[in-house]
Image (tube, rainbow, N blue to C red; front, side, top):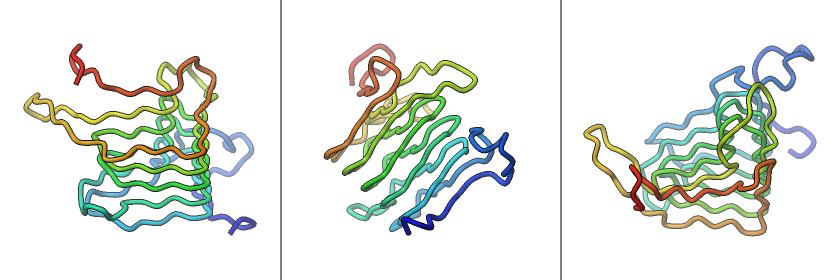
Length: 177
């Protein structure tokens, strides 16, 4: 609930570790996982907050996130690979590399969400808060394109300490895809 969210964090609870990123791996959802719901949660101080590797069931969300904060990650808050993700009233904040990564195509819908990155721990980040792409390189070195069926951000904020906090990645080996 609002008053008592479920908290996912490392097991070191001393003040020194309160905001130290990278204390645990994070939540991983495998390619066969679907219909997952996270509601009223706080996920913090991991490497990747939630990583979804789903190429599975068409039109069935791999993950529905509601009323959730995912923040203070050493890599990414949300890493979705060819997934179906719906998020509403969520905060994705502060990560060492990128906050939200939507890669290899997929279907993504964000409503009333904030994607913000003011990362300043340990190093200066070089990537934007939000990145979207529709391709990957196979083990044989071939370019594999996957459609972005939807990337909708209704009443959302994308902001941070860099000049550009959104990147549409459409360059593969120097060529536009």
